[in-house]
Image 1 (cartoon, rainbow, N blue to C red):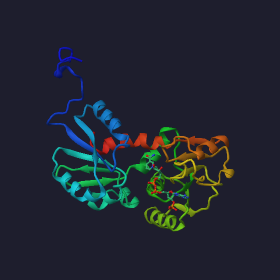
Image 2: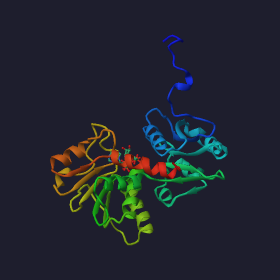
Image 3: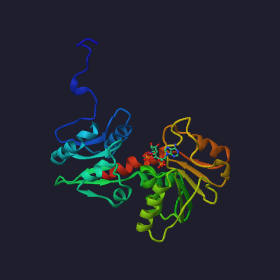
Length: 276
Ligand code: NAP
């Protein structure tokens, strides 16, 4: 295009970034794969907020220095926190929500006007809201949850908070679910919790909270020969969307629930937490 054909700079339509624009970040390493910024930036525009989310690619060794600088960055309102910083960010926050403390990881960080940094955890609430968005209320149900990592811990606490009637936990490393069960019991003393096996029978909501299914060569997370058509089978895995577990559940006539609903609902929750 010749200079004569170029539109005037002032006529080009963009989301204007000015000296008043509030800065949000997605704190990760690397950042190339992150999915949240376009969604958050759309929410900001829809809500008429002068704010923009940009990638903060910070190596683990630089996290402390970087977070210290966020405290003094007056144009900064907060960040989504993801791999590998979700656990490490906890000790760098001035305040941590009960959910983040219970799970031992935060996935969102807000800067208060006085520079204090508040960490919160929305993975589990996102999962429960994702189910609710599809017309599935967890309250009063019996759930079987496999996994004991970050996602499973968050989901377990959110299920307990949302009023699950009975929760059975299963995982390859049993000590980890024993620790999770003990933490849950401390926070929700009346919750009916059991340590289970690979057999999900006797529950109406079955959840894969492990990484099993991300790779085609993975074994199934639990015994699918025990599936019944009246069960709901839910995933936390987003990629691939149809895991081998969900395919087996569909073949067994179960209702299936995709991992992406957990993230979709988190975007709204994160936007609210970040003040958008
Ligand atoms: P994590 O902390 O690394 O936990 C991994 C879990 O998978 C552990 O329970 C582990 O068991 C189990 N596992 C791994 N390999 C196994 C194997 N070969 N056999 C049996 N169990 C195995 O992972 P995470 O952060 O919880 O993430 C789990 C999944 O959730 C990922 O796909 C992640 O992308 C997804 N996620 C989704 C959302 C969303 O919004 N949809 C949010 C967060 C995470 P052991 O304890 O025995 O090692």
